[in-house]
Length: 95
Image (cartoon, rainbow, N blue to C red; front, side):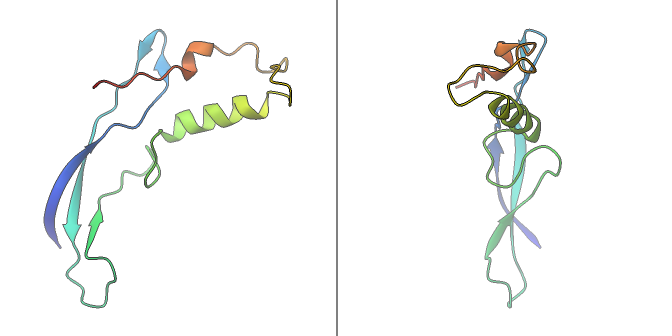
């Protein structure tokens, strides 16, 4: 396995208190040396942080899904969801 290149990923994440979390991952790409492999290169995975090709962390995905399930068809939050901080869904990404 030989290193091909690297790149940066910045998946969106939740906030901690009033502070946005900016997560910068440096991910390596590798050549596949196995002749029987269909992939010529593949990227390093970071388990537990983000799924493959994801733009958000696993934690933020789970939070958005929970809030989405707690909202009725008209868009009114149910009582289980009203205690959540709406700022938790505001995602900021540096340029």
